[in-house]
Each structure stands twice: as C-alpha cells, then as structure tokens.
Image (cartoon, rainbow, N blue to C red; front, side, top):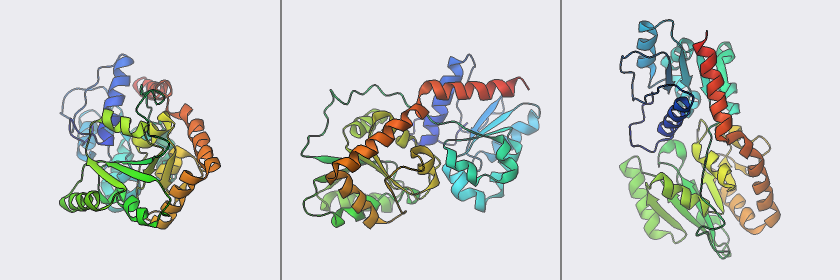
Length: 316
C-alpha cells in the first residue's frame, strides 16, 4: 500500500511495485493499492507512516493477529515524526519497520529500533553506457532528477551555475515535474535565460535513465530524503554523485564519500562541480567510491532481504 497514485513516477510507487514483483517471484499474491481496501490479506506492507496511518489502524483492528510491515519514507523520518503523532503510532502498531538506508536508524525512537531492518533498494539496468549516445569529451553533462518541490531544493544547481569559472564546460539537464505553479514558472524562466541549464519536465523512467547514463555527474540537492532511488540508479550505472549532506544520502553513499556539500550551499556545490570537472584524480575517486557501493543494491540482495523478513513474520 502506497499513497502514491497508479501511473506516477514517485519513488514510493516505484518501491511498492518493486516489492510486489519480488513477493510474486517468492510465490505470494501481492496487490498494490493507495489505501487498504478492507479485503482479506495475510500481511500488509505499508509505505508512509503518516499518510497510511488510518489504513494501518483499520487493518490491525480487523486482523489483530496478522503482521504489518511499515516502510518508512524520508518525510516520515525527517519531518513528520516531529509534527504528527500518527507517525509514532503507526510505528508502534507495525510488527516490522523498514528503512531504505542505514543512517535512518539513528532517527528512529530508541524503544522502536528493535523492529528496524535496512532493506537497500535494488536497481537492475540494461543500458550499455559504452554503446549508448554518451556525452562527448567536450561536454560535462550534469543531471538533476527528481520532482520540483521544496524538500528537494531543486534550484540549488541553478544558483551554483553563475559561480562556475568561465572555462567550465558544465551543462545541466534537469528532469522532474514541477509540483506547483511557482516551481513551474521558475523552471521555465531558468530554462529560457540560462544557457547552461535545460529543464525537460517529467519524462518516462526509461528516458530518465538514458539521461542519467549519459551524464558525467548527478547532483542530488535534497533538504530531506529517506533514501532516493535515483541515487541507487546512479550507483548501478557507475555515475558519480554530488550530494547534499543529509543522512538519507550518507546512508546510501557512505560516511566516507568525498562529495557532500552543506544543504542549500550553492557556493560549496559549485566548488565540487568544478573540482570534479577539472581534477581527474578527484573524479576517479568518486567513481571508485560509487563502484564499492554497487554490491548493496543488487536485486538478489533486496529479494533475499524481503524473503527473510516476510518469512519470519508469516511463521510467527
């Protein structure tokens, strides 16, 4: 169950569909809905402690002996837990809590941490970077992928561009739907007035992956993030990432990753962008760190984690 509607490209919907696929491969029947239908089910897997709270309460009331898995989102952990009592209530009702990166555990209340399991989101991508239409050596394409909303600080990349030295060849392709009129107007204006910047709006997942595969770098500038799937996709493709310094990014990229910048600091972002472009040893170090993270995001690993989790709950 995920509040993200059918057909959307929201990360929560993608996570739900991936779990559905793994569960079906494991021999279970799995249905994805936006809220619990009230129908018979042996297990409820819910994304979003706050927005799915009512369904969690109703399922437990009707089936008190049947397990609930709650997959915690970034907004649950890094925003709503402080403002909405329903988040803690959902966590207390659930039999198992799942986080998508290791740093999230530190934000879970101590009395609930015994329920927590990390399940890294896997990625399987068939794109061949060597044979694709990759960027030329004269270009230094940077991609930013994610819906345009305040939590993502989507225009930090735009603020950084005027700070780059004149000899920089960096260009930016920005993908993602504007989530309000103001964001749309800003993106449209930047697209028309900044030569280095191109906003393409929402594109298909396949086209987003193609753009990512052709990039020299990806920037994720979020103010909060539970564990962005696009970071896992960059890791799978071997694309170095420059990331805002938040737990959701550290939990995926590692504490020793060398390309974090303070949230909303366009000066620091510009410095890292230019360094990655101009210093081959620094760029190579990013590639090496990304390569070391690949083993965490294999489909086999995620499938096994889900299998172990669900099997344990269903046999209790």
